[in-house]
Image (cartoon, rainbow, N blue to C red; front, side, top):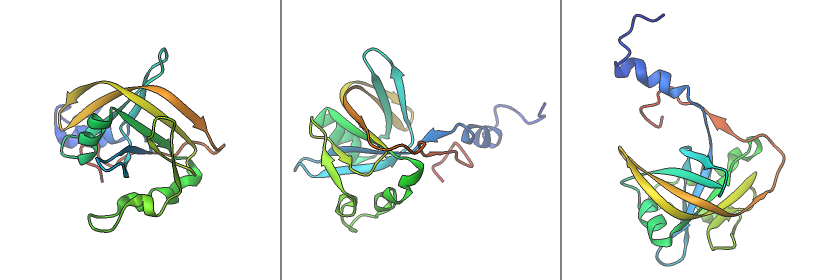
Length: 164
């Protein structure tokens, strides 16, 4: 057993980083109807009936404002063969839309989804909960499609107290 103080952030960060998650492109539309999205890992299924997902979005992200306005969001599930789909979502401000570089379509409710992703899901927002520096948005899955056969892409952080 470790002799580290279990309440220490130095101990918690690396331990929390071992909680693995999937990698997803979380999408919505901006006020002009243009697709917008970000690489997310805080996505989880939270109910079977009705099928419900949640996604945690940083309180300072414009994506949260637009998900609230649209009342829906899309999740493109990345597979092990889909790593190239992440790169456009690392663009900085002024570098153009990541959707300029990836094939995408609209799900039945209008949420953007990546055509080459392992699968996609479209959710209607049903509620939210503030969780520290993020807001957890809950959504009932209204549409979805499995598009590939590779295993889902997963990752773990070196430190669960920051993105890097």
